[in-house]
Length: 250
Ligand SMILES: Nc1ncnc2c1ncn2[C@@H]1O[C@H](COP(=O)(O)OP(=O)(O)O)[C@@H](O)[C@H]1O
Ligand SMILES: [Mg+2]
Image (cartoon, rainbow, N blue to C red; front, side, top):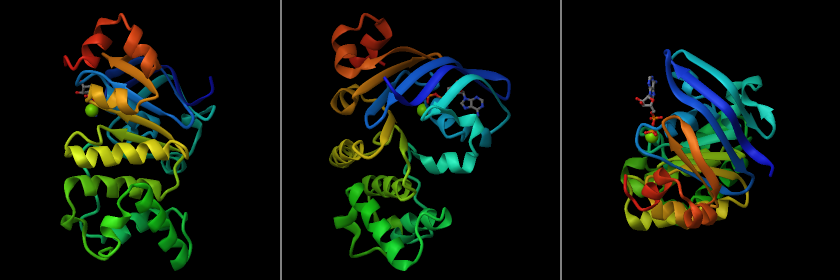
């Protein structure tokens, strides 16, 4: 199977502490791959490795490889890599001093994705629609994001990531701090979005993994210990870590 994102024997040390210990992982194109695993197993670090955000935090040594569409990410320009691979974090982090409109418009403008006012407007509308937020904000685009609920803020962050027209979207427990209604909207948005891009999402919620994942990878102590189509893994796993995670035992 062709992997859009592929890790092989990927190891990572940050400030001389080994955090990833030989990760093998494959995210097929136009699918949702979910990553589950206990706290501290390296899920966030792995996601941040995929767009080389880890390099912004300290001294990083790596070995093995991580590929985007067949090319080692370490041969790519990190800024261009981060445009191609967007990220949404656990705590919604819209720019507080920018309007809702500019939150989505600015990254697209800075990166030269949008040129001219009408282009910017159409990208903002497109991204907010894809994030299933447009109807709720279209009459108050000039307001700051503090008027939005937590779930709306998270959808704004998804729209902001989409405005860069990424080919891969990374989400780190995007619904962990969000109510059920908003979580369902985000899940619905992701289900639609996988037709256009490849999604890799960390979740703490086993039901969510089973609901929206096409593929699942189980991370434990810096390695992927089980990986495969969600239904196959859920039905057939003998791995005690996977069994425990999927029954909500962590
Ligand atoms: N910048 C860093 N420097 C040193 N250790 C880190 C850094 N970031 C994360 N870690 C450590 O790496 C391990 C994995 O963390 P993390 O990737 O956040 O796990 P998870 O997302 O699965 O909870 C933890 O033990 C954490 O303390
Ligand atoms: Mg984490």
